[in-house]
Length: 325
Ligand SMILES: [Cu+2]
Image (cartoon, rainbow, N blue to C red; front, side):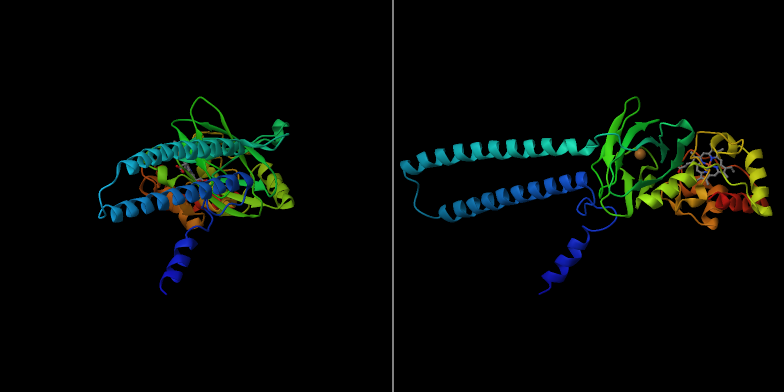
């Protein structure tokens, strides 16, 4: 009686925004089917082996084997070896034919350059017209129902891009380029994670994929391509002056201003993201202020140093960051 609720609880772990068993895209589906196939085949083999073992244990109490039984033993062992060979060959072929689905994009899909860095994701939306190319961080917006090609690169060490609901896992390796196709069959927010241990803050290297209807996506692209809107109110405008006079501008780009650093995430539209610090904190004014005040306590070892500011400057900086929508 208690088993049913326990099963429900157990299986509910398979659904969700970061699960390879809740596929929402063709390549994730191919891999999910592969997982079920392996599970089924291995399950059958397990039951057979256990069955034979129990049978042998029960039989071992009986009369000693006759010579004829020994001959049939030999045949059984040969049969088991052949069956093992066939099963392993079959599973190898099945996984071999599922692999091409990782990079399935044909024709000419929209392409995004993904650069993994310790410990955040840089996304460059490429466009044949260089004026339309732009950069953002940690949140990837894609249109529903379309293949999107990711070109994967790394700046420092090996990282791995994995959004389990949408596609398989692919490494980002310094000095070489890998590719992966993302395709979301329904709108939603999917969570992904760096899947290759890459140092101290590996666990805080998350990303979100926001799959949206084509119209919404076009609007988002249009907004992101634009330069930063100059801050209106006094506090944010003062924050801009602080930002430009501190080392912030040497590490961060804010398009439309003189800030053009590339060490840290592009902040042109940072106010429009839902999290900061690669999924570390929700993007509220309070958490932005906390981040600027002490990034090394919130995410020890990350590449943003503590830049000393007064409490007044901190208020102004956080107002400016939130105004960058
Ligand atoms: Cu990483």
